[in-house]
Every structure is written in C-alpha cells, then in structure tokens.
Length: 315
Image 1 (cartoon, rainbow, N blue to C red):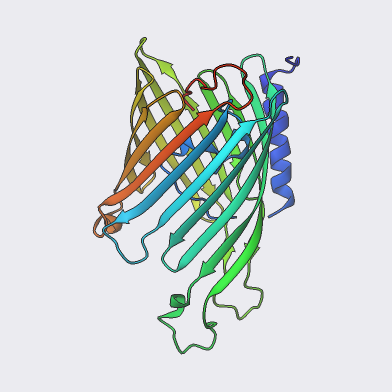
Image 2: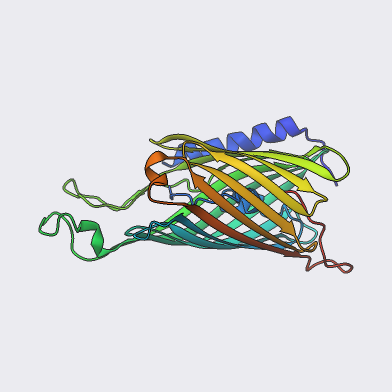
C-alpha cells in the first residue's frame, strides 16, 4: 500500500529529522573507497535493503603502492537486507583500517525504515556501533625522551551513532548521511600532547542512469564529503554500462587522484569489481604508483518462494 505523501514533503521531513539529530550532538574518520557506489552501506545506513535481497559485499583496498612504510590499507565486509512484508531493513558492517602508526577496527549495525512513494522509495536510517582506535608505540619516535609523551600503545574504544536518508527510483538515487554524530577526544587534560580525536563527516551522494540505447547506459555519480575543520572533498564518477554486464568508469577525486574502475556482472547474483587510483598530488606521486581496490558482491533472496536470484541493479 502506498501512502498519499509527496516526495517533496517526505524529503523535507526527513532532512529536518537528520539536521535536528546533528544539532543535538557534536566523527569517525570515514573509510576511503573508490567503489562507494557499490557499497553504499559504508557511507549511509539508509542504504540498507536497497538491493531488495540479502546483499553481501567484501572490499579490500591497499593504498600508495610502492610506499612500504605505513601505507594505508583497509578491509570491510557488509551485509544488508529488507525484512519480508515489512518496511524495515537491517544491515551490518565490520571494517579494519591501518595508516602508519594508527589502526582502527569497527562494527556497525544499521536500521532503515523505508517509505514507498509514487515514484520510488525514501529510506530513513540509523546506525550504532563501536570503534577501536590504537596508536602504537612508534608514534613518539621523534620525542623518545619527552616525559609529556606517554609510553607504549594508546588505545581507545568509542561508541558511534549515525543517521542518513536515501531516496531511490528506477534511474535516480540521492543520499545524505552523517555516519557518526558523536565527537570524541581521549585527551582530557590541558597538558595532553597525544590524543585520539574523531572528526564528523557530512556525506551527500547522487547517481543517475541515462539510457543511450538498448545496450548502453551511462551512470554519472557524485559523492561530496564535508569534514569539520577540513573543508569539502568530492568524487565525480562516470560509468558506461554495456549490456548490463560490463562496467567501465573513471572518476576524479578532488586534488587527490584519477580513478579507473571496471566491474563485471558474472551472474544475476555475483559481481566483481576493481579500481585503480592514479595519484595526481605531486608529493604522493613521487613515492607511490597508485592504489588498488577489489570488490565482491553477492546477492540472494531468502524470503522468496520462487526464483532465489534477484535482478542485478545499477546501485
């Protein structure tokens, strides 16, 4: 049953809800992924259930190839699904990321409530989880005798809470999220010189499908990120989809890299993806030949009494 609610009213109401939540609490450093358009749960809890099936995604990323000491790498595994005969969807993501002397592991659980509209679905999502951040003992190598630097490893556990909105139709998606509404800093004393601090991110995403002919589709996407105190960053991507099977794309990450992506839809259920980031930052390009990212997505229906294979989607 569809309710007599317009898309504009629903979007306005949902935006006010998320802004109100953000106003009440003053974030986790967002895990960087070039194939974010295929792993939306990593940036928005409202993405849960959007594949209309149980969707499992594994993504591994290694950055700054050729730079051996402390180069970033990350791994994430996520799953989400709608609950049969309800408007509820659930999801979860576990991830691990390392950068130099800093290591992070986290687990997030997502809940989404999906409202059918006349031309699409508006989803409102919440997420909660826990994040562990560690600095190993090497962080004070340049100040080994400074008594202000604590000895040994610094470790902190912190709760995370996030919220998001996600609108999807046959050819358009729009999303806005704050993956972590909370703020955290473990340095409580004025003389603290080493602390673990998280910065809040605001994320806006958009994507559209353009039908060129029966065999070709064009899929432009945008991801804009605002990090408090650090300005705006954005990714602009365009992907050509051939026979709904082969995907070839390129994107520009603001002042950072040119990214090249390719995916193949092996079956209705299984998709493989690879991305290569070519650094354009002059300092980074001197020490690294680029970054590599591998993605696997598998979808299947568990409530359907008929064909268990879902139709592949574009988002």
